[in-house]
Image (cartoon, rainbow, N blue to C red; front, side):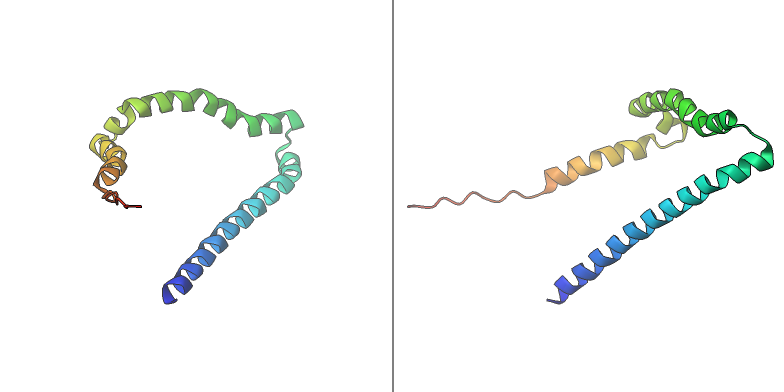
Length: 111
């Protein structure tokens, strides 16, 4: 019973944390969106320039991220930062856990 109560408390804290993160995300997004007219007036930008400011990071990311993904798969990025061994340990860790899980012996029942 005590274990169930602890699990319920942990679940409630986890759910509250996720809701707090979502609230902060929406709050910051809303504040930033509401501030764009003030930023536009203060910096003397046009709507096209604001659109460029908002869209340019996504366009650049579309070119950079696939290359980083390919390099990450090949392990070159990890090797560059000295994380080659760490990367392979992280990849092989779950496999080792699965191999180490004991299997239940099949029980034969006479019917």
